Amino acid sequence: MKHQLYLALVAVLFWGGCTTEHYVSDSKHPEVAITAAGGVTFRGRFVDPEDLPGLLRKASYSRTDTIYISAPDDMADWRLKRKVMAILSRNGFTRPVLVGEERSSSVVGRTGEERRRDARARQAEQRQRQQKREVRYK
Image (tube, rainbow, N blue to C red; front, side, top):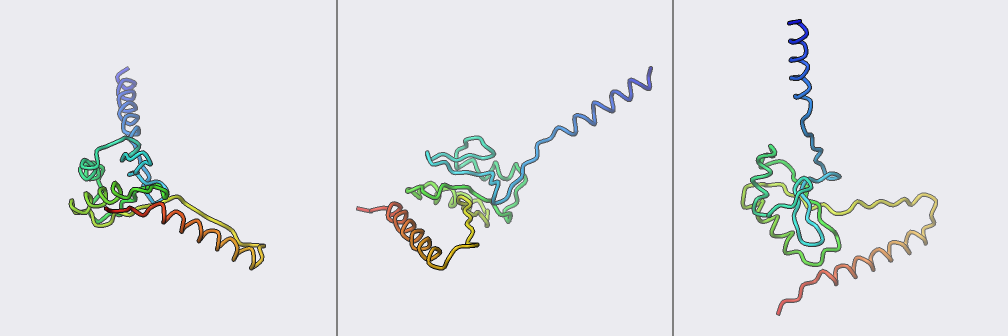
């Protein structure tokens, strides 16, 4: 009977140790995100931008780790992006990186004219986005 009780106790202890959280953080899975509505999230929870350095330290990030920050490409106002980057820099984080949406394309089986036409269309789209992003100061 004692042997079974010890075995059950050991099983409970091992089971409890296996229920930890594991986060994958890389450019495809950033833990910090800036939303289009103007909020900042860390691991899916909205946080105050000023609290971000403390949360990163608690999550075992060192100041030299690369911190990927997801931000929408079409966000016209860059103030929040600059604010988050400045807060991290002031607190000693040396490698914050803004990450946009992943894009890919394939050019296999297309003619040169089709590729040039698509490149011109992408350039025109980028010019339109840049015009939307321009902030006018008075």
